[in-house]
Image (cartoon, rainbow, N blue to C red):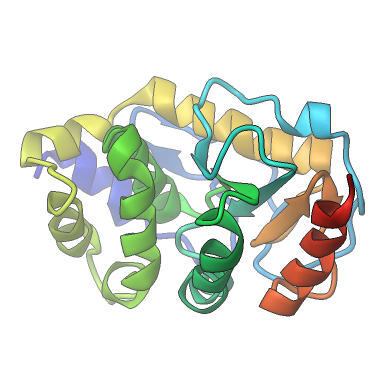
Length: 229
């Protein structure tokens, strides 16, 4: 493991804080306190056209591009609430709506800390066909790498190896400053333009999902849209 990689992940900031330390060769320039892990008051609806614009990153999407309903989730890989959502609720959403071609589901990263930023960088470096499977694995195994005491590098590397990472690829990915800047831009835009101040935050055709992110809330938001001609 390179010294640069160790330096990147050695600063494991609390999971409810924002990224204010260095990651890779530079720092994520974010305002402290703009994002937390609990749902807070924010804009209930945003422009779908604006929401679909990206910051140089290809959206990680499941489901057809021409679906009547598009769901966008803003999440952090070290967020426990996001992890529980992907373990308990998302499989039901996937079975009923994604696998049947009824909705398009997009997940966008808003890292809460340096470790989340590193994990997000690795999912991007994994490649398009392996990106979401790695996201899913990282959420399902959060306790193995996101909440370990001491150095999280070994566990994160072991998980990354399942997606085809070598030590060299792992180290190189975490030094990709341009990728880090794109993640920074995505997170900043989420907070400044769409009022994303908590994870997970979910928009259904531009309308923020209220009352939590349970399966019932998804059904109540999606079904009326599918029923429209």
